[in-house]
Amino acid sequence: MNQNEPKVYERVLSILAFFFPFIELSYYFSAKVFLSTESSFLKSIYINYINKFSNFYANNVYFIFIFMVGVFMICARGTLPLSKYVRFNIIQAILLNIIYSCIGSIYSYFPVILRESAIGIILANFFYIGFIILFAYSAILIFYGRVPTIPVVSTAAKLNVQENQ
Image (cartoon, rainbow, N blue to C red; front, side, top):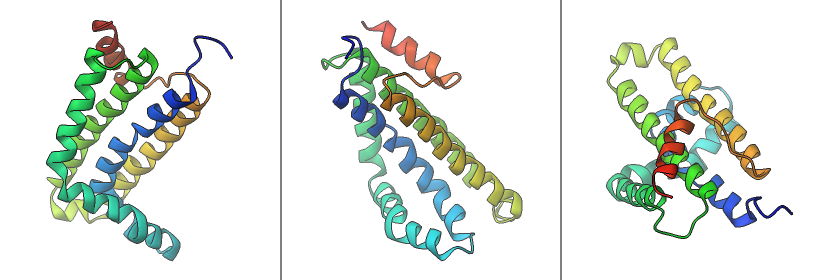
């Protein structure tokens, strides 16, 4: 094993950081995605698992936000002895969370007729499935010890990590 290669716990922490944007996106889009399908299997996944995360987020939104900001500040300032690799990936996940929060808020202000139409369902599916693909891409690269490159987000994360070495 190369000395510069990330350790297993660093990889696990980096992958777990993507739980923030997953909960955010699930809060805004999962009901639309999973309940608009005819598949009883997907509906049961939503009801038994994803809906519980969404409800937890809805009930504790301020606590989760404060926790996330605290984690961001710790990673940006480098106050804990975490490697640059972990800090970079955590900051990327939190920045994705912020982006999805903005997208979800904008989506919720769409007129009801647009949100409930085929266009609204397609948009919800696009954002939700797009994140799942982005998460899979990031998780695979992190699993192999590489850094996922996400346009704009990676640059911003790199600036935050390099700022405080």
